[in-house]
Image (cartoon, rainbow, N blue to C red; front, side, top):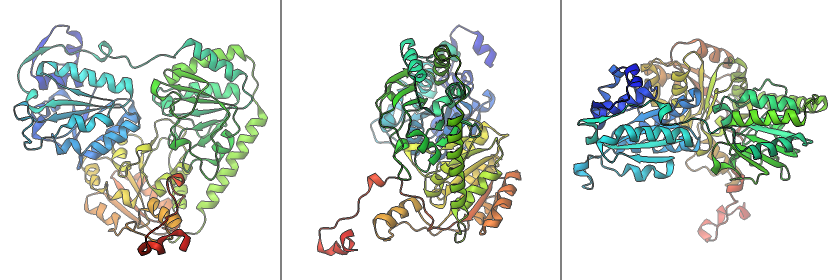
Length: 586
């Protein structure tokens, strides 16, 4: 059946459950599925080429969901992953949990043990629904083969409505048989927008902003997903309000705009923090204001304690979840911003640009840029990691996509990576798992093949993802891995420096030359050991039509502050055996 025939028919069609699943995917516009093949879904797999759906095999299922997480963030379309029942699906736990924390729509097609053998602890049997219940927006279990299309539609409906992954669990014997059902188009069973929100709350928001003396805006992932950044700009320019990016969403407002002050959160922008701490009204657009993303940094307790907060979020559960609000708007970031702007123009129709505020913003940004450059140009042995980040930021074209992992250097990148276009910054976010950046880069490259894609990753996290270089070679995805190699799990090593008197346990890493490993896998590999070679290495990688791994040797002593000063304490030891480890005896 063609896509056109699917769209036109309103009669039930005789088909197999596998055909019903594949045709529902076709109706959803799915053009590829990521995972590792398995016997559990072989019948469905056999249909994909004819249906026009590409199957992209990875080397580890965790990578599949990271790829589709990034694919969705770049395109706005829910990614789809699949794996063998049991271990294939459980291998995705970490990456699905990360997508859940990142509010990324995704459907996990989860074949499970066949119904005749459930409960016998058979080969590769696992109660996958129970495993995924707490790390997805919903788990949809197919109760009968007749319901496969309906249940898959439900999975997509929830994934888009609640912004996160959904498990579609189907016993492996339910792919077979004969059913009669409809193939519906997405508009027949789901709506993507929730509208602008309550008129009363929008009025309150506009009134509050109209009388604000020092308004500040935080633009978040919701503004990106809603394609609403132009609406944020309109409000900002009308009020001459500085705009900060929410944590690790540096593409949520153009960095070259005069009102942009950069990101808040760990290793963010001092310009943003110094600007925000004086706000009397804070407009948070499309952000849940996460606890970690609003913690003090650089000893600046910047989140304003007395500001009246207006929070716009599509998810009611995020309103005032972490910070008390004056006005909560449940709605689409773009539509709500547009409605607030309309009301704002009525309440303050002829507002002139506040040149003094623009001057203050420009001064803060200039000071911060000078500090970042100064820190980067300090000598390192062999290379200051900040220098590498600075040089990378300088050579990246405007349309480049950057993915970043978790770790000391990856997080420091938050201060250096600037974006003028949306859907360009794909970070690991608050689940905080290593091994995200490289598979995410592959997913981003599939989503935007004409954009250069660069992954920023430490050598610890690289050990969890380097196997996917062979996937990038196989799939002809010329992504660039910038591996910052300092021979350590440096985020944790910094904790041992600051809290454990330089006693290093488990933090040092011995690894091969990652550039040579990349070459053996069919990719380009470049070893970078001198700061003066950085620019040429980056430019060479950007020009290559092969995947490239840059093994950048950086100084392991030049480390960023601990992620969570509030979560660690100086060690106290009560037994004599461990007394020498007590901080009071150092």
